[in-house]
Image (cartoon, each protein chain N blue to C red):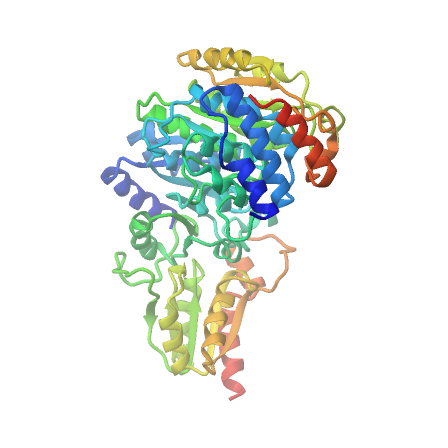
Length: 308
Length: 291
């Protein structure tokens, strides 16, 4: 997703001279093409995230579209008040980009696990939150983000991720969800880079004779409410999966829609169960240990179906 | 006319001194500030009084502004980073014709756009909403950087509190502004030597303050923040630093609560609202200073 983002960013910078990029002293290899092609539009703010976001707000007040780039929790939790007060309240074109949503930097430890960002950012008014599920969704979402006025949040995974979509280029209409697979027995929903685990789970379930629908939400806010209600009308059980705390995140957002609608579906949330990680490991390992990988999704599905 | 209406009329209506001169505007900022904090039972009168001359000088010639065209692209940008003294900026803007003076009576009131901490929403002339401390200098650095990238010559001025300089983000921005050589960025510290609970010296010491800014790569200048010619001289110096490759800071030494004897240097008046006999006594002292 990181590389898809940089490709889409470079296209945007070529088209629109108002786009500038601020990095919090991170992204050496990734941002090299930006540095080579647009040295005047790349600013290194140093390791000073609060001031970096204030700086972005000031630059946006001069008519620029400002991308703030960092990893993990550094561009979100550290300068949270600057995002809220300086960017969102002033309606400024600041695009906060996080590389490393979830357990991307798993082995680096808890400080580098971005597992509350979706809950916290979506609670701030006037921020559009993009949560693409794979590189194809990322390339589709980035131009939409630049066309969306005001403050945006883009949660990315890592570099060299597998594609969940068959095609590398997809058509996407903001803020709609994307159905990757039809299914009648269970609906699997996700936001962000965990999508590939849903796809794998659905393939395994198919071999076991279970038909699972897979839907990705590249936009967390605003939510594609119609799609959720339409899914709820067809499914007794919905499993939401997120590489994130289950409190306040994607699963919670789905519950909000369904509970208010009066639809009768039951939502089962898979994710980090309101705890900090106590072991380290790579992304696949932590997804497994904390019960959000394909195996956990298959297990949960069979449990649900077994009780019917 | 009831008592409230009479009070509002005498404060914000009828005959009032014209605000062209900085001395007069400073008095109006105090007189309005007393009335606004009295009517609203609001706080921070000590900070409003300490920053009065700084704001008055800025809004009477130092900043290039057009009241009839608040978004004039070439205007100088002012950020009141110590947003709790917002009443001073609202007063200056109203007295300079950005919006009707009468509206000042709604400061803090239910349904009003004039929040206690300064807000830009629906208020002509306010560039940036503040209130959480340490936000103004980073934004000001961004404005100054953007102006330079565009080859513009307008200037950015950020008014900070001394207590506010406890915030790490102030010093992050100080490093960045120096690194980027933002020489059309001017910070002014309302150095009243008091913060919320105690003297700055007894809370988090800032001295040697001028040396700190210089060590961070800034031009630095100290002056009496209630002396209008001295403030004008300081801003002349700061504007002339455009081309120096360094941002500039003015440490304006002030007195918290300046203008009302019993409020001066009294920490109580950071939060206390002027009511009853205290309000009447303050009013009497200020009216004796009417230009």
